[in-house]
Length: 212
Image (cartoon, rainbow, N blue to C red; front, side):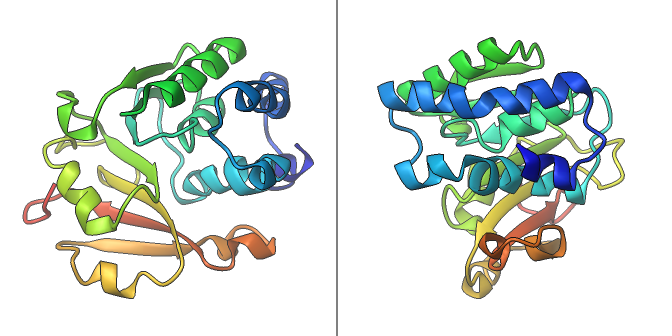
């Protein structure tokens, strides 16, 4: 929990309590439904929660923004972002039912009334959103294809509507398949820990000519 406060010192008392509950909640549910490796569970705040919050270093979502967390797994990056942005609406979707059960149970335990959890493939979700967020569910060009038609054209945030994708490693080849405008931030710009040396936030803007 201290590592979250280190980089987000202005958390409210309610946010501090919710972030502080995550370790026990995920330890409990991971013993029933394995969604996080044992090693990563021991480093939950760094490798899952803080990593998710790298998106918040790129954009400060305005109230009433709508966000799809596509392929949320155990709830990342959606749940940490939902704690940080209580007035932003989140739909956390995954095709695997047991993962969505964990998301729902953790969300309910935290009292997150800005989160909806749904078992669904990305392609089968009919709504449009201001942003789609995700964490390395597949190659970026494939993910962009899945997100076609999911982004509203008009937005009201500092960044135009689009996709915010957390990815690690060498992404040179993947980016060759991306059409339209994109921007990359290295997570090491925000966080000092070694884990973030190869981690990136990739933003793809939804605009005319961009394939979403």
